[in-house]
Image (cartoon, rainbow, N blue to C red):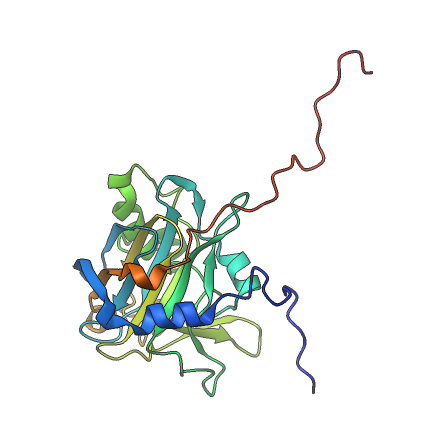
Length: 281
């Protein structure tokens, strides 16, 4: 059977046809980059940090399998943030090397491009699971209370909320996430499922900042998701939780020759609206 064509396509050389040679070189030239920041996000915690335009950021499973919930904003205007739904449409529901993470309207531009993924060869497993998920979103205390009747303050939504407070943001700024290292899919009932994270110690996910970014990551309280968080078999999965490492790099300037930060969407009209003229009506 012929595969159904993707709805969102562009002509060669268009907005979706990126220069793979450029991003491949940026990602593979690890000997031509300078470390400018590194830190560890403890288990069941969150942290926010900045990645300047033209820099690389790598998320690493430093001790073992662990899911991380990632948010991205324009560092200078948090109204512009990663748009998970449009990224699913323009790229894929599970992203990997050369996919881009797009921002909300009216900005509509790539915030980051994925340059490295040690799980890129995972593909589809026997149950249809894939990694680096945009299908679902962050766990949160509101759903947890609804499903379990209990309060818990260390879901990803809460971890991200605490992480961005020093930057003047609140839980209203926390948005749908990229679930890094998370393996998910849709079952035969078209319902969302989560599987045990396939990452091993030392696996990584890396992206290139197309503009100045504010990033925030939560180390999911479900850890590697091998233990159900809700339902009759649920228990506290603290024993399968691990920290995640963050590394920020400045690539050699020669590698950036010809590159420019991404610009806002070219559409700058007023949606067909116009101001009434004096004397009309």
